[in-house]
Length: 424
Figure (cartoon, rainbow, N blue to C red):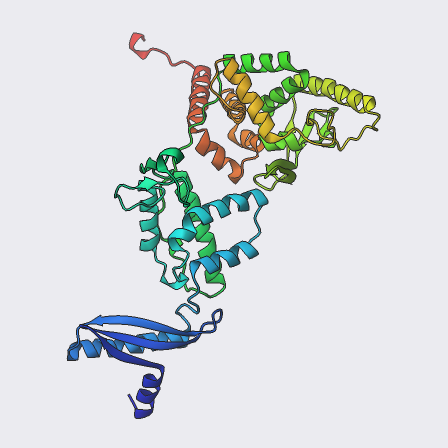
């Protein structure tokens, strides 16, 4: 190395002794976000001549990294990166609300102060392991979980000894998804050179286990619904025959139903957040058409007449853009609240002694179609599953297998019978 090159290396970096090791430190420019000097460092064990040679090689490598900009360009914290990601990413309000909950309860307390260029797959996997052992990431030592941080009497406040409760695998996977999104953005913004979440192992996804009501239970549920209220019975019937999601049924408008052709269009979903309702795109952000059977069309015609009669009683002009299922109390411009649908259905099922929920009607629709021999792609289309049926197959694999066995039996029964050659 020439004298000028050695001088340049000394100006940009240095090797200094730290205990029984040598620290190599190279200047990598000004941090574009914090405005502070950024350095690349590496530690070499030992202080002898051989260690010094290894340190010189390490300096050469770090200088090359700085020159070629292969190193991280910023040392901002993960918390800062999260804030920037939330500010710039385009996600639904309800999804954002859920993400912020995970971020504030778990991610920020655990890793918020860690520089993004210090995160590694090992650090992420360690966090996931801690959460699967205890969601509060306790150290394993006994302690009291206080109800408040203010001065209080633990007996009166009913403070309890801490008991470790593992976080569900699905929740840990959600945390991993958030971290992956944040760190992918950090790569795009050239804050880090690679995303450690891409290689970190996350908990395995639990195989879906849909539990639809039986045909007998479904008959009891729909019969009870109609006995309570014709409009409520029509809602339950529609959920059962179309497999629509709860929010999609609540967002359905009469303008999206062609009763003459027997076709229904699903374009929006309705959701509430902190008491405020709003329409949003469907889960897969796609519009789909669902064919209606004759009985369903008849029920919807009767339901529409009842809705038009309510409008007339209120002295309002009929509007095809009105919701098919509206809120109670004459609020004809507001849809039936999704949470109210779930609550009413759950109470109704409980009174019948059936342990189920409104989403299980979607499973009922799918499994009935599959076991009846309807092809996977058609079922996926009615449900609004993406991936050309991949999601449907993953969720309803057992019923697809049953339908396949039924198809095999039908084909076998139609095959020409072989002659018994032994008797020939």
